[in-house]
Length: 121
Image (tube, rainbow, N blue to C red; front, top):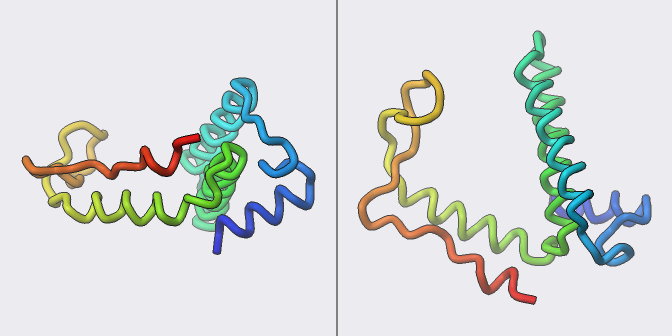
């Protein structure tokens, strides 16, 4: 549902992959900066609604980047595979990301999601 909304928005503004079928390094840098800006807005937000707004904007830019890279048609399959892989992890102590106590840990037999068939040209 969300990726289709992004496709419709990009089509409205003439910036969809179907219209502009190239994703440049400059656009990659622009979109990365925009996502970092939304993360920064989340970090400094003083109100819950501002935190939520920053998270929604982050998702819009992230999914917009997926669409601009030409992967909107495979996104749901990629998401499903990554989530299946994530669900094979275990809850354990955080060992690398700040001071929060918990994180997901990869078990010894962990297999990351294989998305190679989804990105082949």
